[in-house]
Length: 464
Image (cartoon, rainbow, N blue to C red; front, top):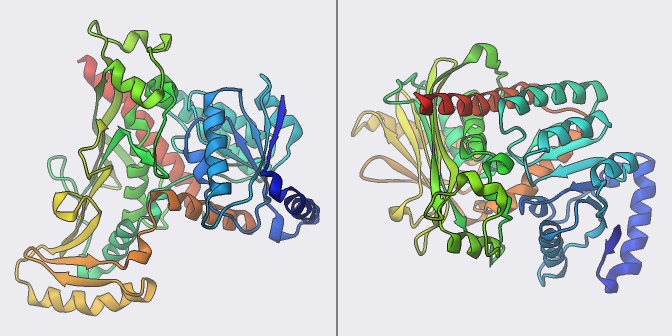
């Protein structure tokens, strides 16, 4: 079944623009060289890729998905972007909902960039077959949720190279300003010193992420698909959100360096544990009045759903001890939300991102010297600030009881939803250049080796 969704008032103009864009795309004009295809958009991240207009991207978007609530929620979000009062978009969603939706997408090739953000059970298989068909893929994390998926993902990267297409995952956290500044300060040797090696008990790098199932997105309570709580479809927490954290460890500690998972990674320990959810809580976020049958092995006798959304990984990366952990609660306390804590320990200073009550639950980067009352450090930090300001004008620092705090202009706090557009713009630039940075592919492979191998280790450890 084919559907076409476009606000009536803009049909003549939009169709004229789209016809011109399509003709230019065929001629190789970079002003309209990209046409999105959205595959089975079960996660709200699929819509966030289109939250803003993107230069060089055709306003026609071809959606292939099974009929159902996931699809309708996606189209409703796109409609919201098109009809908002301020800076509306003009996406023309053309939808195919036949049972053969995936093969139809492959056969028709209506676009050249396939966006995947949804149920992860078949995602790695879809990725492999899509790049094998010669189509670029921009995928939400995780691209693999188990070791079988990891092995197939490696094949997908090899196939993408053979077919000369780009496979990339959406790492939004690289665009959070405090994280960006943490990375920048860590590269200033006269401020940070050298990255410590750490120990299992006291890692050199720690990243902790706290999330909630009940949350607001674009001003409304997010309705989650039932399968989001099924780890066989979404993936466990240790292979899901930790993808971001493992990525940041690599991106910050070894920027621009190529990692080899066969030589550079040593897993130390891993564990997993569930978040308990009542039926009433489940119903509030899914609008379903009963647990689907696929949860039967995850429900206790007192009708509590056990969601293995929590995980922790201790590992060594090129000899540096790192710990990443993710925990999920049901609903954040009033006035709070998802939080992130990040520590990088240097020989001269520690760089710490906190997001607690003292920070009004907004991330703040602190620079704390290893030696207390170090006047020489204060002088070096003040001098080095000009290097930071050359990239991020307006960033300042102020003295605290423990060291220094960064003061960041509000213009840099774009928010999580805006980061999807920033990732997509970076990906579009890679498409224009015809390649990813040399380190990106081996480092993505290393990242998914860490998460999927940690899941295996956590399961084995739990059986002992």
